Length: 88
Image 1 (tube, rainbow, N blue to C red):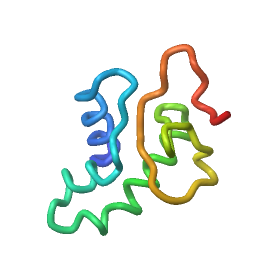
Image 2: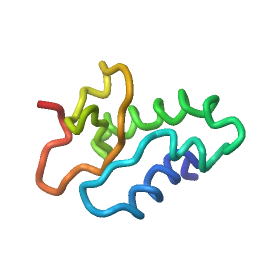
Image 3: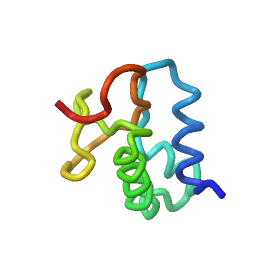
Image 4: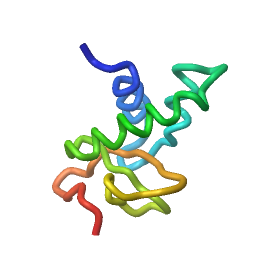
């Protein structure tokens, strides 16, 4: 069974043009519109797990970040074909 947060992340990304990103809050608001702030830690945790698996890229100011060591405002996007999902 797919996690609803994971499913929502990939659904939102599929609705964007290639190479475009989403804000984790979009996912939280879609799942819990009234209490989306409470969902944010879970959304970020799922995103970190997906990034560690190479299925997602976490970015900050447009550049990939290490999923094991980041702070602040982030965005989520799909890895680009043929490019590593690891930060530079």
